[in-house]
Image 1 (tube, rainbow, N blue to C red):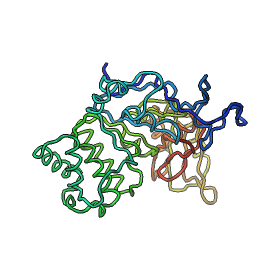
Image 2: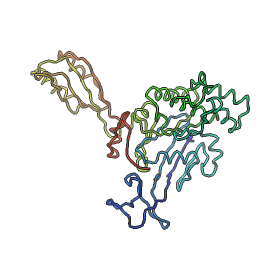
Image 3: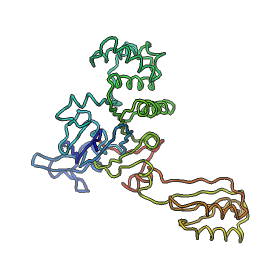
Image 4: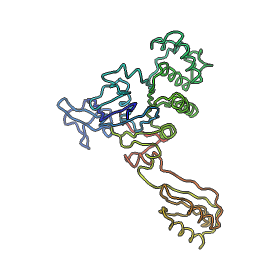
Length: 368
């Protein structure tokens, strides 16, 4: 099968200023300003190095929205910069539509466009339209072709009514959409995003995600590669994800499958109108515990010991018919039934031992 993007044993090393013998308590070379827990150190005859990428294997299909997840310093941005011809690899193989970025950069850049958060390059004194006309000229588009493409993109991103306003009057969300317009002036088949919704408010982030899914991926058929810290964003956007940690891919599958890599169970939470916890309820708990696929039943007690709910530990594919039959046959008034699935955060912590913190479930750890 031919992949749109493929990496095979990809390696990238960065030299450090660590001196021989300068090691920390873990035995790794001390690297000033860099968390040594992020990278493994590699010594050679030329001196110490840190390995940002250590044998990364990825295959991304045409038309797929593929997410790269991981904490700061995991190697996400390095991977993207190699694909975009901005950084040369030190080992392994990389192909973008069959072209090697280090040997055929022009061919790669004909097919791929990157949208990086630190990338601006807009003139604040020009309008949004004038900025796009400038970049269209740089990309070699003719006047009529440029006008048609720019008008389409302004409609596509909802900027038509503000196209002739000065760039300095644009909100952060509008600036991000204009950045997307610039990336799409050349109609490339692959779009690469690094933290696409960083700095956007919840409404702006949701609108930008809709643009990526409904228009770029579904309507335009683009292949989209994005790196993100945001777990919810990855869950909503991506067809598949890869979790990158310390320069290695530790998981690669659909978001739902990755969530279940570390556990085959889920939790069923049932709420009742409170009833006295008596002999009938004890028999219900015992009966539920005997159902195939049920691994534990815990009562939730309210005031004065009333039974107000159950927490049931079940296998992820269990047939709930028998469980529900027992509860409905017990005479209890069921108010709600909810299933709690393992989250991407749960999977990440189990795989790496690192905590995920912050709003939106973002991973934070220092490093380059």
